[in-house]
Amino acid sequence: MGQMTTRRPVLLLRSGRAARRPDSLAVEEPLLVRVNGVVLTSTMRTPGHDFDLVAGWLVSEGAITRAADIAGMKECVDEDNTVDVVLAPGVQPPRSRAFATTSACGVCGADRVSEVRDQLTWSLAGDESRIDLAALAGLPDAMRAEQRVFDRTGGLHAAALVDAAGKLVVIREDIGRHNAVDKVIGAALMQGQLPLTGHVLQVSGRASFELVQKAAAAAIPVLSAVSAPSSLAVDLADDCGLTLVGFVRSGGMNVYTHPERIRLGTDYQSPDGTQ
Image 1: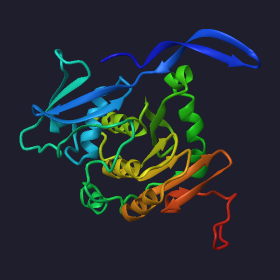
Image 2: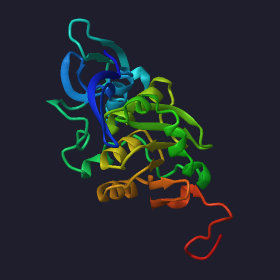
Image 3: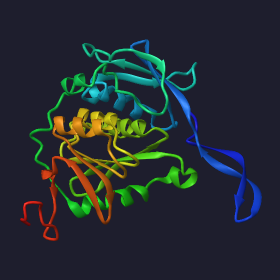
Image 4: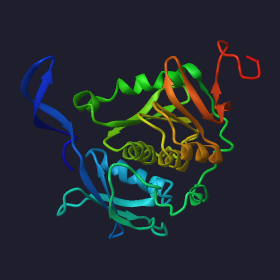
C-alpha cells in the first residue's frame, strides 16, 4: 500500500543563508474502497493502517458495529491503493459515494444534517463516565509525544483513543483528520471494543461536524480537540449527548457541551459558586 513518508529536494532559506537538502514529506495517495464488489468511495489518505481506515469508515457510515460484520478484507493485488471488503451475510453496505474526495471529509454520507442522529446505533445519554480535568488537559502533549511521522514531516493530523484514566489506547496519524479518526475507530472495532463507552477521542486541530459524528457513531462520550469547534459541531454534540472540549491546553480548555463528564477537582469553583 506504500510508505507514509517520502523524500523530496528542497531549497532551505534561513537567516540569510540558502542550502539545498532532501526533506521528508507526508505521502498523500488515493484509496479506493470496494464493498461486495462495488466501488463505494475514494478518499485521499496517508498509506498505513488502511484496513483500520476502511473498518472505521464503515462504522462511521452506520454499516457495521462489530468485527464479525466484515467477512473478509484484502488489498487488491491487481490494483494499487484498493481495498476489497466483503460484508457478512445480512449486513447492508452504506450508500455509494463513488467519487474522489479530498483529505477533508464532508457530511459523512448524510444528505441532511438532521439525518445524522437518526443513523446512530448507540445512545450517549446513559454514559455516565467521568474524566479528571488534569488528565484531559494532558492529552494533547501525550498524543504529540507519540506522533512519530509528524516528527519527520510536520504534515500529519493525529487522533488518539484514551481510556477514562487518561491512558492512550491507540493513536493513528493521517493527512486527513477524519481519516485519522476512522483509523482509530477501526482499530478499536477489530479488537472488539465497540461501543467505546468510557473513552475520550483526542484530536489534533479543530473539532468539525464530521468528527463529532464519527465519535458519536462509535459511542465515544468525550471529544477533545487542540483547536476550536465549529458551530455545527457544537450543535450536533449537544444533540447527541457528547461532551465537546476545545482549545485543550495544560492551562485550561473550553467545554462547549455536557460538562458533567469532567471532574474539576478542588482547584476549580463552578459557575454557580460551588466547588
